Length: 140
Image (cartoon, rainbow, N blue to C red; front, top):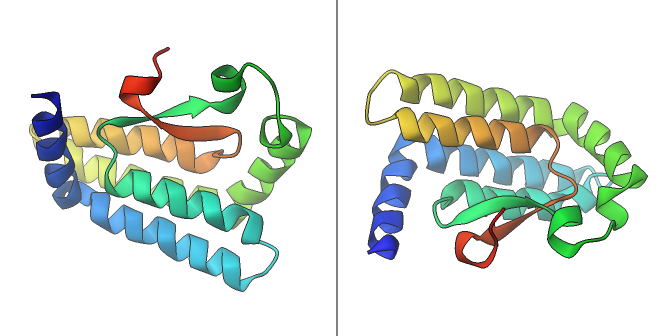
């Protein structure tokens, strides 16, 4: 039953801005690749774009909490990477998600999707040090 509800949620999500914002994430990833300097961020943008396309059934997790240790992306270099990401793409993707959220909040059925856009706006600002995991495999 959960899988059916997730499928319905994901299909409705596509209509409520998920497809458009996933394309925005993938465009940001392509731009990152073209700049050469942005290649390290491109893979993450593709992964988060996939999560943006089909979010129900997955969640964002801090890598530090998930693995119980710091790594390259969850330390000082991750913070520096997040600052660079914020300037290059994070701010713009965050604004896109906020605009989509406002559009969703206009309708009653769109409120849960607006909340998901708010979560994605937060992720888009500082994504380094985070990972996407299935909901069933990780709980807080």
